[in-house]
Image (tube, rainbow, N blue to C red):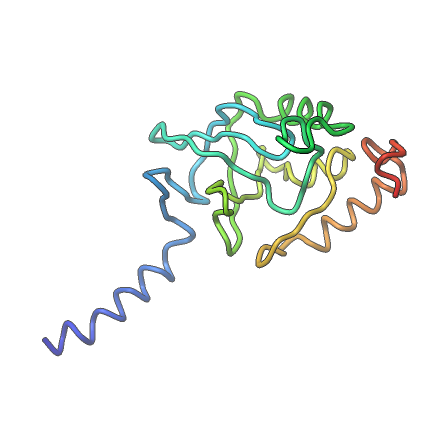
Length: 169
């Protein structure tokens, strides 16, 4: 009994410290070590990913927010269709890697992630192209400085949505 009492905390600590962000939600595999197939693009900052086991889940990009196209209250916002088309052009039928921060899920049970197409950081691509604004929620702030700098540059050069008076407030 004494041995079990001593080993239990060690086993738990080892499991969580060596997991490298591996977990699952309703059998969906969440790991930075696997590639995911993009099943479909929902809009500019959300898509459905399929894990190697064929399970799917919605993925919401960390640190960015694109104009809405299907929002129940906001409806279709200016530049929303362009941001969605950009995401479809770059993500549809592609294999991607996901990188996670501290919170892995949002309140809508979507996986929160940074998305990589080979070596290209898709979240940053959206900002560089003026397809998105920065948007951060605790505790996921890892790329805040880089993303803010990219947004500022796109805004000053009036790239993408920053070329519309609607967003020049």
